[in-house]
Length: 338
Image (tube, rainbow, N blue to C red; front, side, top):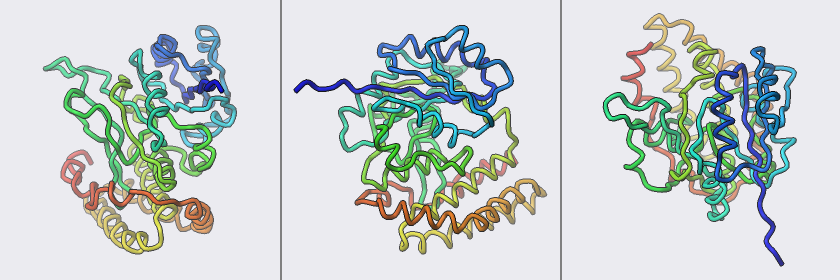
């Protein structure tokens, strides 16, 4: 019996990103393997993004949202209309290497224990001294308190392995089987943006799958070209902490939750106290609102937790997580910018 070719749907979200779309879509359609369908979810842009794509890239199927659903719910809306066996999710503020899509598809086809394969994202602008595009992220690492950061940041791609297991994939570029995405019910619609990628990856891992990067799939990334320009630090702090706490509450088993939650709150309250000391009241309020939001939505979170824990299989989550606080390690650098 002949093997049926696996099809790929590429999903890209857009919100007032018309300035990125020419370079992004040109690189998509210049791939060695072009996706079987390309879908752009437009989150109610007002800059003519949809009209631009209709004119210059008519092969793109545009899904117009009637409101800005953010990255989490927006991705789910687009995925619900995708037909491919595999889903690739990407940001629009990027230029793809010609082999990017081909290598993602080849790797996930070959690695049966892997649920997500992520690209290696390089900084779009080359280093001034060396002229090299250093790594933005090769997937992400996470500590046992739900705080995530880049894997192998700011170094040469030549210095990292060809592929490596990571805790999570950032939302910038990754591939996942559509059946697996549907099984875990996609992204959490409550997240809007930030930490939605950690939560999705965590739930994939709970089913026993691994997550890896392949450095044969390369992307040049304009870091925070959308999120960094549209939202201030306090709203991003709110989303990040709100979603991190919900992720822990949903995804940890009972024993781990009892062990980790007290230390999580100790770190959070210490951070809030420091914000007051530095008179950064907007950041203090962001953390406070994140906490209050989780209290209000706790009944819903508990129901989600029950569903997630029922699907859980043997996994290596505790082994691959960092067992010290990444947030505290980064605190020295963080103090300088607040």
